[in-house]
Image (cartoon, rainbow, N blue to C red; front, side):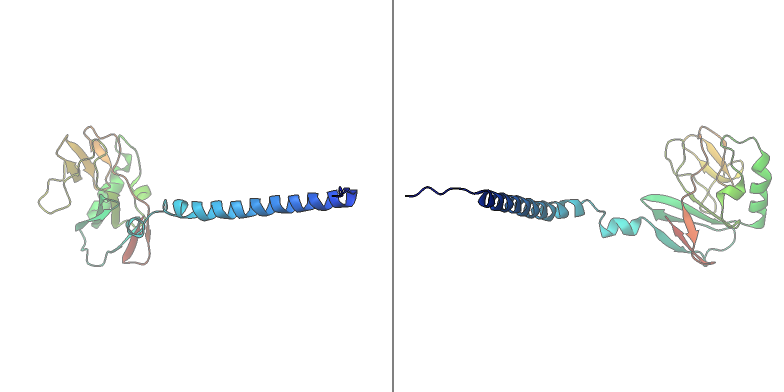
Length: 183
């Protein structure tokens, strides 16, 4: 058999073939890794039922002045109160009171007649009373947590007791005069 003599031209062609095979293998490997990883990454996205709970829309039209309702959002109660003119005036008058967690009423509401807040006491996570007629409302006419004696005013601000902060106001948007989206 005759020995083949490699010329510089045949070495260059072999190097190009190796480079092509290397790049093709790398490309197929990357596509395979992406095809394998996509279902894993996609499974980490929240499910449709979880996304549905991330925000709720509430129709405010049936709520009469002075009435409160409780809706559930993200597993927590949300208090929605249609405040009367007297409650709004009392809340605004208390802006200058000695508050543990100072916050003007205007910063807690988007529309003065609608107070929307998470109904969980900021002390130990109890549910304050004051949503139903006949419930004790505490010394300031708002909400009262009987577990440890926290009193909240008509703006949901802590006025007396061990709770360190006001009742939290969730992110919400009025879609129109009667519909609010919480979350």
